[in-house]
Length: 334
Image (tube, rainbow, N blue to C red; front, top):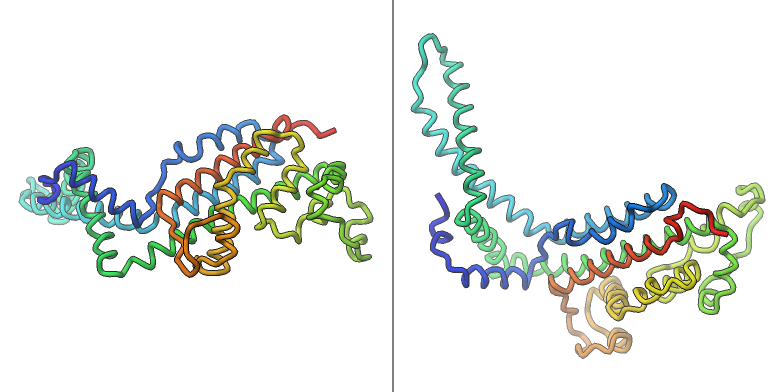
């Protein structure tokens, strides 16, 4: 039996609920929708580079799951509630079963329990596949979450998760680009020339003075650790430095250069800085960097739709990076 309010709910009512939920809560994204381009790009990668991108993918999955956790918890609670209701009904019916000839009380109880579980499972499957059941779950999810908003209990939680979603979205890209830059240069030390002679990159990177301890630790052979020497202590949270490293290591990769120049990527980078350093309170530097019309002192508005857009641009950029590795990394760079 469906929720009595859900059974009479009109499509317009559901649309209103959906819009209200979407104003406050980020909802899970299907893997096929978000990760299809990335997964396709990973198919041809060598064993050298694949772990780097798989870690990036797992970090994105964790970020999406974390930011959508209120919806997930509410949905699981709603489904569990209906499951318990149907199981209780099935259990009551099973209690009316009488003992068969020669059946012990213990055997009867076991049969009643098995019967109740089977009936409840079938009823729950039917309920979740029906439009009335799906509507009932949506109604319950919305009731839990929106009542939390109206009471002020979830207002700060929902905002904080959206802000941290932005930070996590940028962080996954930052870690990928730094790890990849280190890996490429460690594997292909001859590319250090491309970095140190690049007109932009050389303003951000230079070989540090090497200590005797470093030389001894590497047995005076730096060819396998130039990536660590050049990039390990550099802050890739600065988009300009990140772009300088990537462009120098992938010269002439036009799709990659265009992806790095997207205005939304710059916006994401500046939002990350504002959230990390100013708790999302707009300052003159943010306005100057982004051309934002927000007032100084205003709270940075991040909607669930905006967060989804940022997850998508980061995932797409990861796919472009993977596709930009010559021959998937199977051939040694000359």
